[in-house]
Length: 566
Image (cartoon, rainbow, N blue to C red; front, top):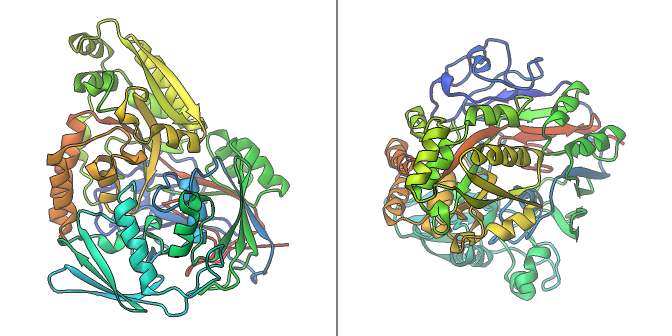
């Protein structure tokens, strides 16, 4: 099997190479599209893979590509392990990447991100135009797309009316405001194959928002027929249909025989729930599983040693957020004290012992055009004595007890144990609540309305635009989503976010977003501590696997079509 390779992809706007947080960086010097060298990148990375299984890396993120040798074989089921079951597959309410992996294979959007995760390309749309004033989008649609058969419709043709219904539903009901309702006004069907979207004001990255699975195109009959149960019975236009969900065991998909795009090579996908990375590696080595996602800790080294590791940089930020509305953490001085009490460098080194994660400072990935290293200095230095003093001044001389909600993964549990130690040194007792991600999501949504959940830890992944992080974390429009479970709500910040979103000039947008970063970091909204690599174990029998920075399970797309040797 051909060795995996990491393909460097530069962002549209990049910073100095010294800002790089890497994974899988090469030791070979070669000029990248960013104008820096892979040698410089490697020098700033503590990557797990120094053995030349990768080539270059830049601030633009990256992809990893598995073997594409040989002639594709049709048939068989692709078995993929992931750590947790989905809570809901309804685009308006999903909250974790585990749901994403299933939804992206069952549902379609008007646009999708390309292989390099740099540009948005048409999918259900064929093309679009924007009016001179930037307020009207005219989108033309494919005329050969049919919905999968469901309980309430028999696989009818998709039309512009379905697009209008789906986008209006997203506007009214999406918990994470995936269509940006402050800018989106309304849409209408000009013909069966043309949709016209009217905006309240200019929105620079609007088309990229339409590539998010939260804006998938759905049949009204199925959504309304199933009601609140639609999330367990999703129907769309994607390459696979949802067959079965067995909670905490598996999710099964079947090839859509009436798919409008390239016919998938595999007959189906089974997402098998395996919470332990070492068990997942064992299953790949014995042939029970084809791809193991979300490898952590020692399992990464095992996969590397067995020549099974597929690794790419991440587009995610990993953090602990505080409850801003209730309990002790509603006090900014308490949040600052909790941050000062943690030796973040040592914590990151302790969590990621195989170099699979690097230090973060801000609620943005380093490749973002709004990222500025100057704001790293806003993170207070490690000072436990100063933290004790500040805590006493805030009214807690004897400390207090607080909760931390996390998903039950190796990285989160290590992080929680370290925070438990650090905070105990200033008199704070940490009650760790570890659960499946489905239960975690149910617990943290709207948790700011009480003091039960004082803090929560998670990794947030989004598209490359800074709004996908800052808008989701801090907008008042996302108060009822897990991305803003801390309950951040500030009218001044909303204005800055809208100012950034409402421009097509990235330099101007960056200035607005930098003000957002400065404000939320000065308010100690959380500890943004790491960027984690994407790590899969891939069987030698699997061909044409693509691991992008967003960690999507891409099975049958315009740029890859996985097949499995028999």
